[in-house]
Image (tube, rainbow, N blue to C red):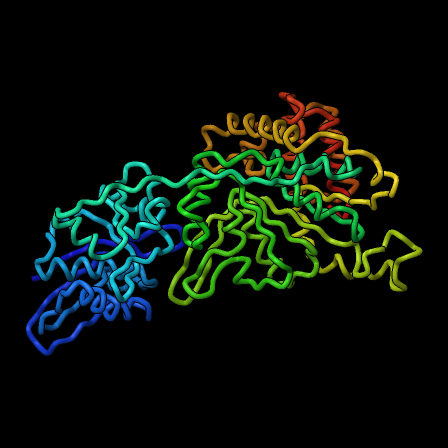
Length: 502
């Protein structure tokens, strides 16, 4: 007799259906798992045997063969324990095969039969909903998976509870979604003294999801400004929250099944490897660019990052997704992030101060910022020089707009963009606009067009730089509530573009 159970294998944020087939045949007693299992899956037979033994269920003196179909798809992870156990229990006649076939299962078994939480419950629930099946998972993962509408999620604490549920002795109640969390303790923009131009640029960047680079001496406030960026960003929309949570689910970052409405803010150290930033390693896990999906990736001390790591950012910035290629798998992750970077003007940091600069000035500045390639520099929409703050400014009381006031303006501009791109799913903000849509939303009057053409010729803007100026100008107009882009909008957008080349 052959029995079947259902589970999933993860390829990026996609959960591919896997059928677990179990056969009991005459022969020498053995327990084998086939179908391209990794080490963790192969070891499932010992965990399953021990968990069944804890329930006083003895395996028969037969050959037990478990096949994970399709057999040519690599299977990784410990979440195959529970579906293997279900298929085996059905083959032993302890639970009904029909009940098992209507369920997608995932979970790791302890030796005593306790179910251990696993990563990926949210994508697995999405796959189960598409197949019109229920999801059976560890209780600790149920709150996360229950966020998917149209899928009944059953969370169990042990294999004994699973058996009692399928035999009708003690049915389990459906899991409830976890809490929607808001990021508390956000830093306020009013803490920043001076730096009005930098704060204005940060508001524009947040409103249109534009990439920004701050260049300034040590202690000028570059990192301080970046740390306040989450406080001026609007909360994630329901669709964005689900997208982001699916990536974080695969990385095991969802706490107690809760989904956060706060936008991710990732700030890896400059010693981070390419696999940490882009993704990869064992199982081709998501990297920082994907964990920052729909949020911010902040790279402090940008020139200190490895050159190869920086160059790999160019394609994800343009496409909004990253392909992690390995010998046995090509895994795709979303990574529509806002890149925020900070850099000193030179190695010593005091290039603009002749009394404090090193003896190699100005060559040291050219060498230091030269670590950032021209193609990558060209992808920054806004480049802002952050001057030192005077002691007189530091003594002034807090003034200017608070983060809440700026966030309201940013949210209003984002609402305008959401309405603008309502019929274009791949575009959500002005930074995403391209092709015919970009031409449609950036019509210029004669004065604005003349100004842009003159600046493009004078400063040698690339085609990419030309279009990025248009996108920034569109965002500035949205913040002002203007329907059309005018020359002042173009002028301000150009002013953020003219340092460090075109």
